[in-house]
Length: 452
Image (cartoon, rainbow, N blue to C red):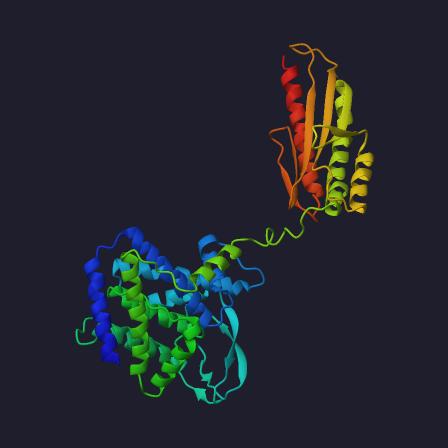
């Protein structure tokens, strides 16, 4: 019964008012919960494909969901901006006008686009949607029974919107009209006008919540999984029964008021499925370039691939630049070794021998093999006069084979560590950058020694 709903709302509103002033941090946490739910559910009801996790990730971190339409992200972004604008209006106690309603519409829908439509005789067509402008063509809809449900004709929209705002102003301070009745009735009256070509449902819910919030109530959230009940009571209102719709909105308001009470009392405001939402949020934070890159665990086969496809090309690139150092040093020598567990090591005179060794491990599918390779490039016997006798440069490159990835780093502090999962090779660009840093370090050492 509506009277029972109104009584519960009155009791909860009084309880919330006695809790004021609510700490800013607490209220912001509660409002963030409202905002995220509102953005997700209000757009999902209208067909937006973003999940709750994707919506939350996009709004909090700016990450877009792979494979989802750009327009769906822009709709969420615009809706969020409209909510933030609404909160500013509430703070400043600004009067609601047609201009502000059109601004909300502009924020929500963004740029013009083309959408499906139905002609007055029921044929499917398309039309250009211009955000922020009232409809220029009829936007009647076809019902489940194939009948046409008629909204206000375009030429009558300005006068109907003017009358709606006059009605709101007249009843805003009417003590005999509960704010639930005021806000829910405004929502329904707005829907019957359907003043815009698209986005009317989202605007109706935003304006209804604006009325609630301007009167000290929290926003209400029509949830996606309950949209059939929402549409059902709207259809009942179309048939002349408005009370079920008001009662439906009232139960949502009760839920929102109870959430504020729980939040202020220090109880959890998370819902039963919020843990699932948090898991989806965490997954959504992982961008496509980082997602599912670990596909293999270390074995002799993929270690051999890493040696052949990544380590070898990097070492050969370094060998290509080392002859330049012979203009400065008498001896440019190199060494490759693989430390063993018993404090000994195997030394290789060239890379081919090292590669053959790992190839044998792979062919025999050996469970044990060297977990580290050390490459050393030694520059000795400086040819030119320096400040303090002779000097040398010693560079070590370490390749470590870990359980799920392999790393390449050097003894040079400025060289970036390369970390790659098994099954992926280091790119030519990364190899060039890695070797370039080594050469830069060598040049810096030479410059220090040759300063006059």
